[in-house]
Image (cartoon, rainbow, N blue to C red):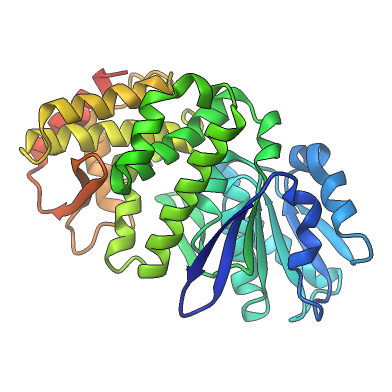
Length: 360
């Protein structure tokens, strides 16, 4: 078992990585808990509902089925689930279990944050991307037509329970998408993690247990450290947005249907890496190394014809990370180290994004 402490003013808790952990979820439920509501999707429930049910024997629980997909990650779905909780007798003693991928973790956490002005949540992520990113740190939210995660709340969970055994059923494309978030963690904060990702792609893509558990654990450790230092993205936590400025714009420009989140982040990481090289912050050999390592975990879908660098850069103005009209970019200055810059000239951003789009 690997356990990483997340210490925040709102709550201190652990993010735990352990094979077979899904069958121990009840161990993390407080004794005074009332009704339990499990936010999940029907496909996740079909695959792993039995294991979770066996863990919850003796508890009163009700699944709340989310239809799935970024397009349904909307406040209307949260309202629908909240109404169902009321209809089934939910109250302030209730607990939410977010049991699924990153979208479920975001929406389940948001539902818990606002139901009865806040009830506890357990994050039980079932995709790689959710395990290493969405489930850890208490950021919850839903999308607006104008952009991703533009409404939400910080709501720290009771615990994050990560069971790598559930990844065996994950489609290959979704598995690869999660690996991009692990690679992001290496670029921003751990040269050692990056080197493992660069040097052992066959083992990692082949689900080698020791290699996979190591990179998952290191990603969770990094996220836990960053969130502990900066819960609400006032400063340090912004480094976790490496690749997300252009990545979020790419997701929105393609209607959240063409790219998985991790794939869009991969394109965004390429753009940020090219931008850092253009600005003279990152030596060209290291830029090449980062981009070639991103490529090891591809492929990423081709860019649709209507998507241009100019349109993506224009879209970044609507991103929640844009403050006072200034777009903030997380740029690598060495493998394992980044800087946050704003006020970068548009021509350089467009040129870097063009290079990233052509790189596919």
